[in-house]
Amino acid sequence: MNYEKQCRICGKDIVVINSRYCLCGSDECKKKNNKRLHEEYYKRIKNDSYLYEEMRKRDLDNLRRSYKPVMCSLCGKQMVRDYNAPTHRDRMHTECIIKDTIETLNRGTRLTPTQRSRLCARGYDLGMVKEMIKTGEIY
Ligand SMILES: [Zn+2]
Ligand SMILES: [Zn+2]
Image (cartoon, rainbow, N blue to C red; front, side, top):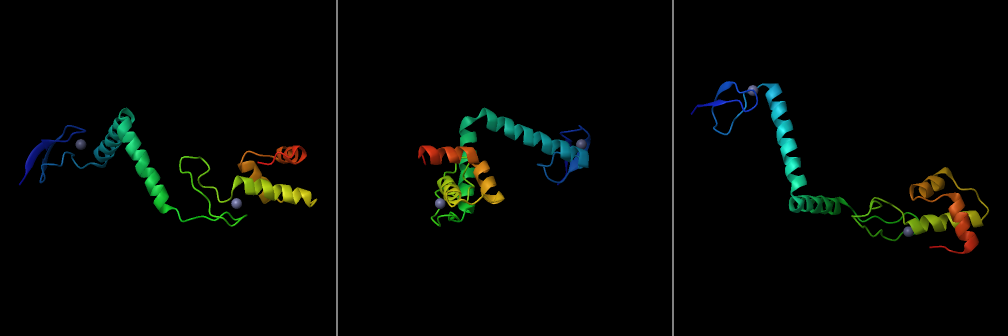
């Protein structure tokens, strides 16, 4: 069965074998059509907070499923994942990193570059940790 239609992008007359087809088949029209569908999809999602929430939940579910339990490489205990937190990919507890830093400093040893960058990644620096040691305020 042939259907006479018009390409929905360039408007050219086309004959298609499936009534759902609506493109002339040129790469350019295919590309433009994909782009349009994509834009429409995201516009719809942006305007629809319910859909947006659903999508977010689905993403989080996928995230959860894709995660294996991760053990903190410092204390060996399992990391509790808060998927809404920006830290959900951490492989060490922040408090363990700080404890590790404090222990290193108390031994009178310098921090390795790895230890430094771990601290940095959590928004701490050496000065802050030294301050914690001084004030005894270790969280
Ligand atoms: Zn076309
Ligand atoms: Zn830990």
